[in-house]
Amino acid sequence: MKELSFTYPDQTCALRGVSFSVYRGETLAIIGPNGAGKSTLLLHLNGVLRGPGRVEVLSESVSRKSLRQIRSKVGLVFHDPDDQLFMPTIFDDVAFGLVQQERPVDEILERVMRILRALGLEGLERRSAAHLSLGEKKKAALATVLVLEPEILVLDEPASGLDPGTRRTLIGLLKKFSMTKIIASHDLDLVAEIASRVILMDAGQVIAEGNPEAILGNQDLLEGHRLEVPLSVVLRKALKNIPL
Image (cartoon, rainbow, N blue to C red):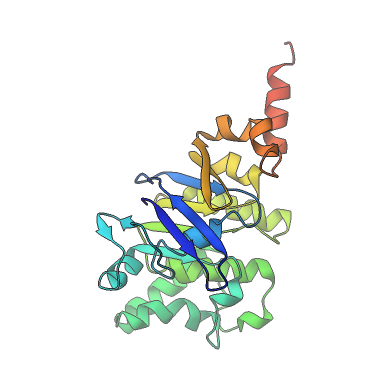
């Protein structure tokens, strides 16, 4: 991403000259207060939004001409799963992308059932999303992306609204995935556990970036941008100071 800007039709400036790189195989977390521009940024990664500046994915510039190819490589999971689940059943939702790719029926069935089993959704494939819990919806939305085997997984607030058990299951899944991951989240304890690098945004700009310990342990930096040091980091520091 180089000098990316974006202004909504109501003249809200969401991004102001944002530049950074993401490295293959890393888990990059993007943090910041509400209105920082995190979600707007993610929507540029597969061309849902396009503003002035340059976005390049796997050596391919995001443009109208390259959108089909880019979207086959970048799987975007929205904050609200209801924005992603629109078919009559969960099976249909997860199969939708493969059907659009005109995959053989046997392959579609095998891949859909494999990903549903992996996410603990087997048995729910004939249910409507309207009859699922939020945690089940979040996992179903993730399944619609994972079934396409993207090289880059992009998640917007994946843990929001989840109960502790479902959140822990999600963290375990994210740790297992080997693809490049870009995650926007307010859950800084999740970020501390899974991120290999952190970018702090505010008012549409990159404020700081570095390893999780440096960013998440900087109380003045976080509080200056309406965030708090996560409890896991506080406890880790406290344990280091206890004499053995």
